[in-house]
Length: 151
Image 1 (cartoon, rainbow, N blue to C red):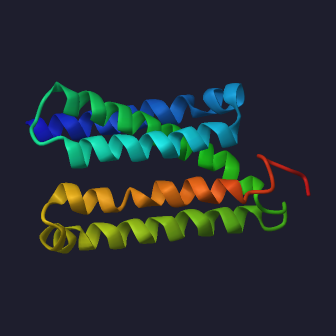
Image 2: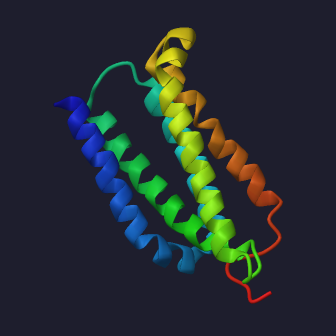
């Protein structure tokens, strides 16, 4: 029941975050929102998977918050990624970026059990994957284009 409620709030938060991500990005800027999402997702992952040792209401609140911020992040990526490519390549390149990300996710899910044994628990194994937020944050520093462009 506890796991089910946490996963439900994670999904519900993601759904709401994805729906309102466009408004948030328009108000604060896509790069700024994406950077904030990467930082907040990393910090919440640290707190939830490394610091939390027992189930509490905080786990539910944190799961909902993590889902919401991740949902906003995914929505903003749908603005940022296409804008990195010329119009001629935009659709194919965006699809490739998202599918490569999905392949990495599938591989990560496949090896989480082995990592949990190797790293001493699921929290440690799951947290190791939050390093992708740090990589994403540094990647934003090297982006040259902002949002959609006609070039």
